[in-house]
Length: 244
Image 1 (cartoon, rainbow, N blue to C red):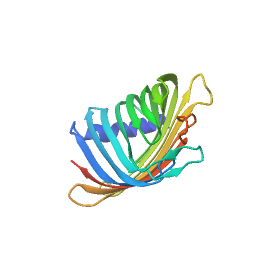
Image 2: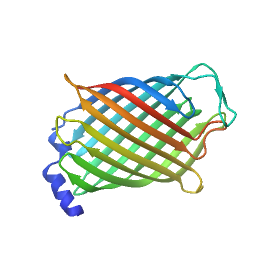
Image 3: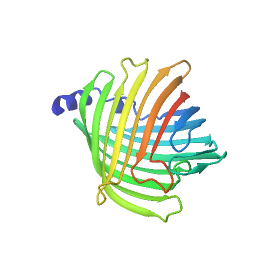
Image 4: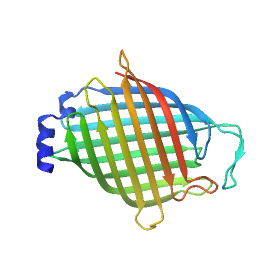
């Protein structure tokens, strides 16, 4: 199966077919959150992609802000009416081979809602395509990961472990809608109870003039959050995106 998928990808490689051109996207919209902040807010994203043959480089910047409501959580943490936000930068370099690929990636996160002062991740590894068809890619990947973080008022901490991820992209027609779904998990190599988990599902529908409508839902879970913070955050967002 891997050989057949590899041959099909080699014959119709969407990365190589782009001819080295930049493919960029900027999106702005609104979101509803539950967890460490139960409120509405604004969200935005910038994505820059460029292929080099069968190698794809990708840079992304995500951010958002929300007005915290005055309430007291089950953990006893009290929220006041103030603006809180998050920002995440990520970079990914992926090289495709016959039916599999190698990758390296890094990211940096600040999330005042979950009381994450900073979280940096470095990872790399290999992945493979479990399914391939017209407009569809289903892949899994895994590799080692190294995390450096500071939560709440604690000092910095670091741990190494294993990262595994899965992603599905489905676009039945070139000019039609796109559906995607992804799951990612990072487990501490020494503390079996420590893990970071995230999942996302979304759809993008083209409009006109390079614009599209993006609707997505996501959830993040930290088994060992900052003191007083909740471990699970969920978010629903809608954005207007422009590709250029």
